[in-house]
Length: 389
Ligand code: TXA
Ligand code: MG
Image (cartoon, rainbow, N blue to C red; front, side):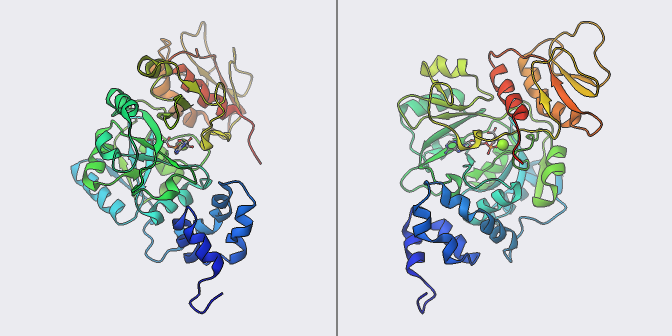
């Protein structure tokens, strides 16, 4: 340690790719042995974020001027005035949950390191999992990411809408490096929901917003879901009714020659291929993976069984399409007519309702894999995946 309180280790950290982490680490008084550059150099490039995680969470939660965690959450009907209020909270560094056409998002000013760190803290989200940044349109995105002509064509066709594009960060990108979690890219999306758009317009800055649920839990499609999962951790929840689509955006990586679908979602692979030609799908044809897709996710507390033809005694029954005869009493049907967009819209709300301690598990009928079925089955597979711990 030198007289000015700055060590060579600190100076080296500061000049590494993530000066924001250095500032936050310093604020949280993280000892040198944790941030040791020697130690960080021994681990893969994302590991530093992991090492900082717990201390940073403390930093975000204990900041004196903290307004992130005032509770209980202020649940407000979304209208012009409350959207402007929400933007003021965001501008001051607070967290606001708001509806999008896909799921509710947990928003923070994407240019504010401390506000973005508070998102990770509130969700209990691993620091290696990057965040989607919300913008009004391609023009506003162009301030922070590089849009080539292919990207502009895709954005013109699908934005605003349920499609997040992973793009190279612009050299003068204003968005906190915490949103990129150690990658050189940034995921951006223009949401198509009047409340999300009103907030973005009033704030006039990019908004980082993961789904507004504790990390690993089922995504929220109503304000009540958000209040139940994160109620005490957000300054305001804007209630704009149930999310019309009910499934998260598709995440498409456009940083390399072959576009790669990292997460199936509200924009179907078929629609993307009609504009881009053949695309790769992460995990199957491509080694590229989205950090957030590695874990069991979207998980109800109950075990979930897919492709079930019938419920076992004690199980809740989640049906799809016409069901012959009488189903079990504790049944929900995602879409009695077999409509995949209706099923997508009902999926998370049905899982929230059926995830009750009086059942032993949730049995789900087979759902076709085409169109939105790919995203529905992806979420169900993750919900059914073995859990850690
Ligand atoms: O519909 C949605 O996308 C919602 C609403 C609120 O917009 N947001 C959402 O965010 O689902 P989240 O954080 O729950 O999921 C974001 C996904 C994660 O799987 C994350 O790993 C991936 O996008 N992602 C974000 N930035 C990325 C990047 N730069 N490279 C690769 N994957 C990225
Ligand atoms: Mg999520």
